[in-house]
Amino acid sequence: MTVTVVFHVDETEKWEMALANVHNLLAGIEVESSQVEVLANGKAVEIFTSPDEKNLRRMKILSERGVKFPACRNSLKSHGIDEKALPGFFAVVPIGVLELTEKQLQGFAYIKL
Amino acid sequence: MTVTVVFHVDETEKWEMALANVHNLLAGIEVESSQVEVLANGKAVEIFTSPDEKNLRRMKILSERGVKFPACRNSLKSHGIDEKALPGFFAVVPIGVLELTEKQLQGFAYIKL
Amino acid sequence: MTVTVVFHVDETEKWEMALANVHNLLAGIEVESSQVEVLANGKAVEIFTSPDEKNLRRMKILSERGVKFPACRNSLKSHGIDEKALPGFFAVVPIGVLELTEKQLQGFAYIKL
Image (cartoon, rainbow over all chains, first blue to last red; front, side, top):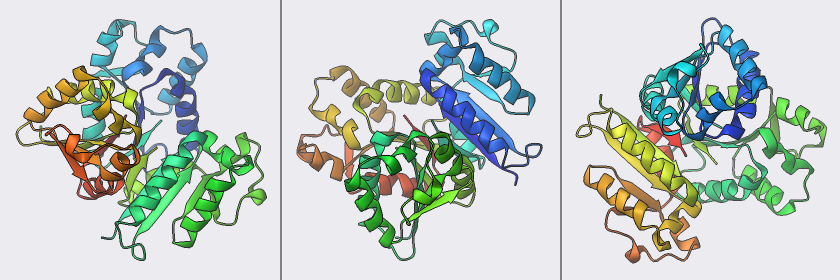
C-alpha cells in the first residue's frame, strides 16, 4: 500500500513513540512509493541540542529509507538553535504549521503524537 | 448528518475525555449511517489490564451503538497484553498508525485526544 | 497561499503555543481569503474564567484579523461557564468534536495542540 502521511511532534518526550510509530508504519507500506514526513515544531526541536544519540540515530536510519524530517524555523529560533548545527537529514521549513496544513490540503493524512 | 471520523487515543488518562467526546458526537449525528472509530495505540492499550470498569463499560455501550474500537497489535505486544484477553468489542489491527492513515486517506476526519 | 485549517485546543496550558502557531501561520498565508479556526473544548475552555489577560488579548487581536474561535457548549457546561460571560469574539458550537469533524470533511486541515 502506498500512503502519504505527516506526523506532528511538538514535545521532546514524544520522539521515542513517534519514531517507533514510523518504524512500524514502514513495515506495512510500500516505502518506495509512499511519502512519510515527521514535522518537528515547538519544544520537540530541542532534540537537536540534547544528548539523545539513540533517537538521532534512529532518525538517520529512517531518513535513509526515505522519511523526511522537516523542522520549523520559528521554533528553532525561539529555542536558540542554529540551523547549521542540524543533522543533515533535517530540512528547515519556514513555518511548521503551514507545512502541516499544506500537506493535508494536498491529501496527506495527519497523525499527532 | 452522516460523518466518518477516527479518534486517536495513545495515553491511558485520555480515555475518559475520548469516550465523553464520542458520546457527545453521537448526539449530533445520524448514528446508523455514520462510521465512528476509536483507535488505541501506545500506552492507551493498558486500559485492558486496568481495573477501569467504568470506561470499559462505556466502551461496550458505545460499541453496541456501532462505534468501532480497533487496537494496535504492536502496542498490545509491547505492553505484554494477550489479544485473547481483550473484550469482544475490540478488534485488533496490525499497525495502529497505518489504520489512522488509511482511514484518513479514505476520507475520515481525525481527532486526537 | 489560501488555506483552510482548524486548530484543536483541549488543555489550558496549550493556549500559549496554539496562539503563537496561529500568529506564525498568518505570516505565511493570504489571510483575507483563508479560513482559520481555533476550536476549544475540554479543559481549554477554562481560559474564560482564568486571569490570563495576555492570551485573551492575543485572541482578540487574531479575531480582528479573521481567525474564528468556536467553543464547545458541552465543555462550557461541564466546566460551569456561562456562555454569556464569553468574550465577544467567541462563538459557541453545540458539539466541539462535531465541528472538528465537519470542518475536516469540508476539506479543512487539522492541527492538534
